[in-house]
Length: 96
Image (cartoon, rainbow, N blue to C red):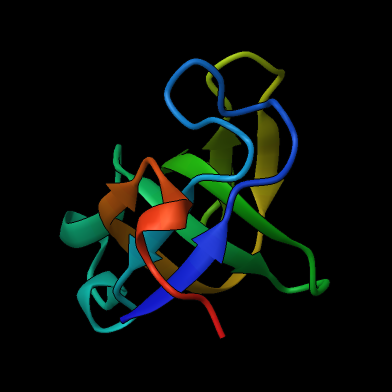
């Protein structure tokens, strides 16, 4: 498991800036475990996002869907990690 902190507003209203999202890389090893689910994703070009994952139009690509922004279409991913839980109030945990 690992955590990411939400930045920006493309996840609103589901994810708010500052919230902590817990993800699991081991759960993202099969398409059945991440397609049409919210995931942390790192693209082949190094960019990282928290998005809903869909199939791309080309073999081996995916489309990343935002809740309130345009999709990022037909991207190659290095890895995908489905969301396990969201910590809405980060002040409740101690971050290092």
